Length: 115
Image (cartoon, rainbow, N blue to C red; front, side, top):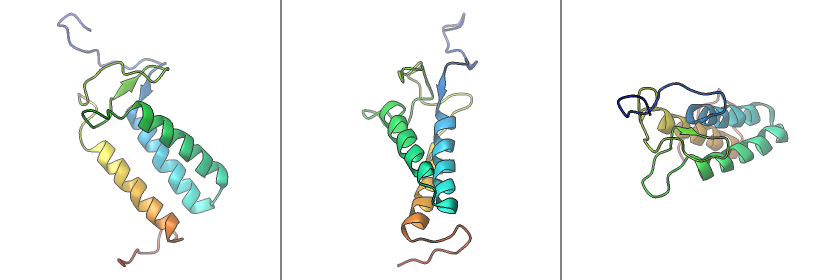
């Protein structure tokens, strides 16, 4: 905490950050969509499982923003100067769309049709 008993805003080298994990999930899914490389899928599953186990708050919802290297929350607040309610839903939406394309074996540029 800083002098006014507020959480610090700086990031430290050993922190696990929410935005890195959601963007990694998206990138691994899109990598798999484009290449069908099983290594992309294996890493997606690892990152997905770790992320949901540690960032997600099962009692009150949303994700914690910053974890230590053990996966424990450094701060219990869910929003702040850099983390708002936009990024996680956007990332989950992107992931869902990409998973739908993978399931339907659609390339990234082919329009999806409703069934």
